[in-house]
Image (cartoon, rainbow, N blue to C red; front, side, top):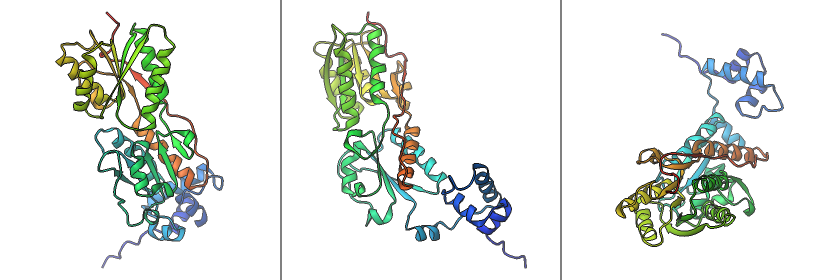
Length: 332
């Protein structure tokens, strides 16, 4: 009978790479920085790939007292943005032997049932959107190592933020450059720091320019809700530009404008935020601020890994970019 193929061990990897078993343990346990060289680390990883070596994570986790599992807490997955955040976080986590459990709050934004008998026993840490802060509190995730996404840095703790203020600046300068002076802000009806920044920055930017006016209307983050809110807001003193907190809100403005006999952009310029797939599916294509969701997730995961390793995460904001398309034009 043929002999059963034996599973490669860390000793086999060490022999293949020409290093000690201690070096293999450091590299595959992601503890090698400052202890072995980058060249040695890559040689160990290549030897492990060649041999098909897989460390016994269950035994190692038991020894270290870690589950190597983190929780990503987000609002309900109503757009692909948070799916992108998950993809980025999981990509980085997998490189370090971690798994990511995605937990969308079942009610969207608000309290949520604890999915674990004991989150502290089941998880090493949490990454959470500020839009799902109540869900985070409900599962007691704030008692674990925590990284907040799109959250007020002044509140303390570790935060990873998109440069939303700069995104609003780019939108405002674009529209002002096209001659717009009468603005409507269609804001998300969500008590979240990221939306507070958008409102505050837009008001501050326009206040610096003589002859501008700004009105604000609020809407749930849905196309239907935005259509109703925009139709009511546009029926009075009409603006020439509508700045929306989200691409779904912008799509609702398109529908409201059509019902009122207004053309985008000839009668009404419209901008969004996120650059979802929706932005290039509507006609005309939407001028919007591109937020790199996958990079956002990657940076969130990198920050949490730094916290778990007792290191200080980078505090820089992630740049955003205005995508100018057909929904904005000069004032007639």
